Image (cartoon, rainbow, N blue to C red; front, top):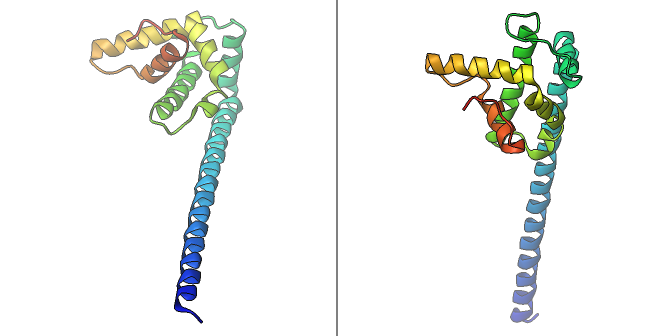
Length: 159
C-alpha cells in the first residue's frame, strides 16, 4: 500500500474522531442543559406545593387574590404572610443570582403581581422596611421589592 493512502486514511479517521468527539460533547451539553431545566422546574413545583400545602399560607394567598386580606401586622395573618413573603423573597434572590430562570419565575408571576397590588401587603412590607431602616439593616423582603419594581414597575415605598 502506498504511504500517502495510509496517511490520508489516518487523517480522515482523525477528523472523523474529532467530529464525533465534538458531536458527543454537544449532545452531553444539551442533555445537561435539559436536566438543569427539569431540576429547576421540579424545585419550583416543590416550592409552590409547599406553599399551597400550608393551609394558613394558602388561605392568605386566596385572601390576597380575592382582595379579602384585612390587615397583617399584629393579626392572625402576620405569621403566614411573613412565611409567604420570606419564601418569595428567597425565590427572588435566587432569580437575581441566576439560580432560577425566567421560565420558573413565570410560574409564580401571578402571585408576585397580586402581592405587588395588594394594599395590606404593601403596608406591611413598608412597615417592616421602615423598621429595618431604623435598625440599620436591609429589609428582609428587599429582593421581593426589587423584583416587583423591575418586573412591573411596582414596589412598596421601601428602597
